[in-house]
Length: 399
Image (cartoon, rainbow, N blue to C red; front, side, top):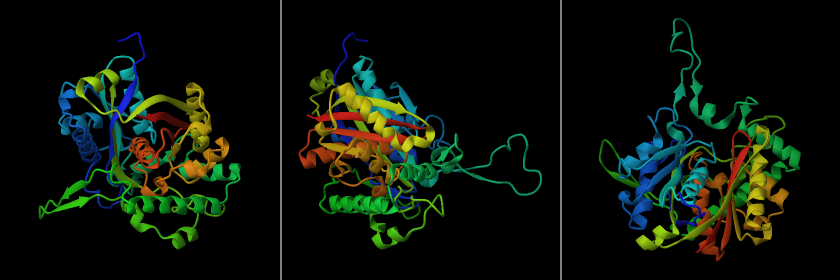
């Protein structure tokens, strides 16, 4: 413990490609994805697992993964058994919250080098047979529960799908279906342009899939959802939640996906000791919460707190990553804060790439760093909403 708040720097930031639901990465568990991205992040800066002080890793759909997912990732990635690990579940904010917790550990002198991030394999989320441990299946049919919806996509307070709150937000903010579709098309086109110009290569680590039967190898290096874009079909889709009067569709909402992201952070002292290149400085971070049904606009509150703590204005920020759980989220937040849309999600967002929920908070931070580098910016904000009415935000400066 130190009496002085220490500076925290990002020294490595990488993500896997985002695999479509039941797609190219579906043969891998969240643990597989998490361990691969951690190994890649360490290798990228020539670090060994022995140099890690602590691990914080996000995951939401943990049922069936086995005890303590972050610990499994730690050991599978070659980090020693003596290194403490913590699994983080703040729903969609999990990956970003893991970085915030890791940064606090360094700021307080509890650690010097921390591995953070998040992972999710929505393709492998199990179904549940609930209330059968003692009652048993004695006669007749029994309902099975989709664990992905139950623990990841459903508001237990209001007892409805998160998309229903997206519809409510669009209505309250005066955002039309056309607005949502226009933004979503823009997200896809930005993402595809970034991919085609090889602007995403620096943030993606390829994943090798080994066929269990033939032992042949397939290398996955591109985000899979981008191949499925069809503007005409997107604009014709029916509402997904409120079938009659809804705004949110499968096309202007994020998809179900698989992926992982890792951010390694270190103190200034550790950077000097190991000769690590400082990529970005973590200047501040903030959480915010309000009514669960208003989670879509919670990033507004988190960003306001963040800017106030940092004595900054919206115009001081060069680039924004506001997660696209639904297109209505960045549209509403940008409207409320008067953020120029050309500065938001400049390489596209989760509507196009997909939203592996435990991964996305870390993913948008990885992408933010890449965007700032490629676009010549310095100061950036990552913000993400989460179920229950919350949001997390984080401010960085490139070094």
